[in-house]
Image (cartoon, rainbow, N blue to C red; front, side, top):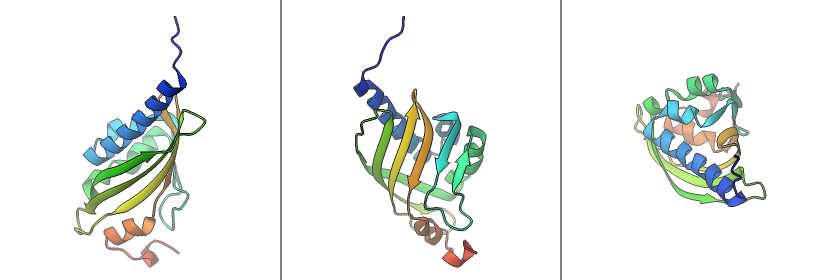
Length: 148
């Protein structure tokens, strides 16, 4: 017997996946974070600059890309707002982070807008709109170090 989910239940599931994404990143649970993605899941950075990747594809690549994040950054996410769409599996979220880079001690204060396509409770494509300059400044770098 197949149980059909309502649009609202599908939306709640998709938003729950997104909330878990924030929880796992802020707690450094990268394996659990990776498990939120489909096997061929994509993390897309439309505003990636220079040496920052524009796209990371597949669970193994996602894990390898994020595994060192908790060693470098301590962050907490807050002020989460969802913007419901016609597609209940599409999440549009706006939120902020506060934290620091662990080696430099520099602050990491970021504002994000994320567009996330889920399917059956897993992330298919995560489009991450954020300011790479905030990360560069937090690690003590200069833009010139990352471009050209």
